[in-house]
Each structure stands twice: as structure tokens, then as C-alpha cells.
Length: 313
Image 1: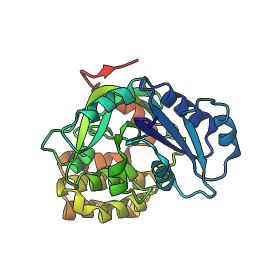
Image 2 (image 1 turned 30 degrees about the vertical axis):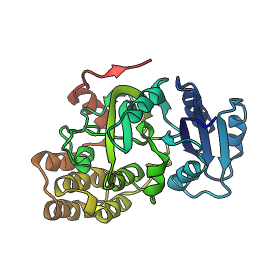
Image 3 (image 1 turned 135 degrees about the vertical axis):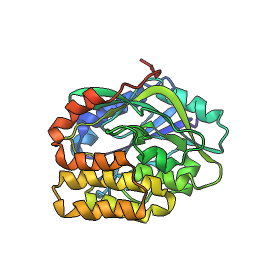
Image 4 (image 1 turned 90 degrees about the vertical axis):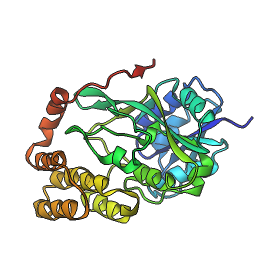
């Protein structure tokens, strides 16, 4: 029988983490699934630990060479049997009803190519939060939803890789080509096509682990790569969204690298090519002046808790 959903999990050299991710996928209440783990290069430890899982719905593909997260995901998509694809990062987990609730949503969607998302339990070092703090409005440009902040901290608008479920047909129609901001890049390209729309399940269905000291396959790029990405994607981003991306996403990485020579050029690019608001400028200054170690403490005290969100067991 053809499964309803294929889960694609790229991984490399993280045996304990990927085992936990796989187990959360196989524990879904929606049983008609297959789980494809793509090992991005030879990895005996991961292969060995996955061999301990005897569920017949699990398929493991080991690539001969390491090519990156995007290529690994596309390997899984190409091997998928199901019409619907759900991505799961190897360091994240799902609540048991994640696929069931999202499959119900896409099955009754008004869109021909729906992209389903949900709230996440974001586990920061020393704190736990529910993100995003708001869902997109019907008339809101996706780039503005993703990049424009209404608070000093990350997560006002969020569609994260492990929250997404969409059709295989759409992914093949709009293939992702870069590991840099791969989820955002794909969504902003996909939303340009007729019949594509975002459906948001207002429940916490995913767990997003944000350990600053943990290497991530999909978040390991530098500020110059992030800057090049937004320049290459400016045609699908509004000026109102361009500025906060430069000042927050690129600025945070540049500040983390202590690349002080980039401070004024990045500020000038945000002002000359975008439409920065006062809050964006304050955030940019804070990213350069407030030590990273103090930000979790500030986040806990200054960020409001997301309200009216159902958290499923």
C-alpha cells in the first residue's frame, strides 16, 4: 500500500539525535507513513544505530559522499512513495499527532499546493518558548511575515523546516538549490506559483532544539553567505522585509563574528535598499553591543508568552 506521507530526515554523524527524531516520526498517530533517513555520506555509527530500529516503514539511504543538507533532502524526496512530504531535521522531534493534524489540513485545503505549518516548542539553552508569536494574515506578504519583527527577539513569524508538510509535486516543481536559508528560499520561491498557499495548524506539534553549541546541517553558514542569499532573492522580498533581514539575520551573524568593518556597510544597505523601522535599527545596535550570553536571560524577561495555543501530548 502506498503511504499517505513520506518523512524525509537528512543526517550526518549524529547517531543519538537522529534515532530520537526517527522514533518520534514512527510514533505518529498517522500510521500510513514511510520514514526515509538520508545519511549524507559514509557514517558507520548512524548506520549501526538505525539498524536497531526494526520498523518496516523505515528506509535508510547512505550517500557515497557528503553533499549537504539540501541535496540529502532531495535524495529523500526523489525516493519518496507518498504524495505528501514532511521534513524533519535530525535534531528535532514531533508531537505524536503532528502528521495526522497536518494531513487533515492539507486534505481539505483551498489551495492546490498547500504548505502546512504549525507552532513549535522552541527549546533554547535555559528556556522553552512557543513560536511563532503570531500566524500570517491573509494579505501579508510571506517575506514580511518571516522577517519583520515586532519584538526584539527571534520568532515573531516562523515557518521552520520541521514544521512543514507539502506535496512532492510542488517540491519537484520548485526544487531547493542552496543550503543557505534553504527553508525560506524554497518557500519564497514556491509561493510565487499559482495555487500555492500557507495553511497554519494552530497547535504545538513540533519540538525545535536550539542549542547554540550544537552543529546544525542547515544552520552552519556565515554572515557573508546570508548577505549574498538575500541579495540573490531580493525579487521575492519586499523592501519592508529586506531591511530587517539585513539588520537582524545578517547583522546577528556578523556581530557574532565580530566583523566590525561590516557594521556601517550593512546599515547603509538596509537604509538605501530597504525600509527600516526604528525597532529594526535598535535591534541591530543591540546585536552588536549586547553579549550573546545575556540574550537568553533578556529573552525570558522581555518576550511575551504565546497565547491561545493548544499543546498536544
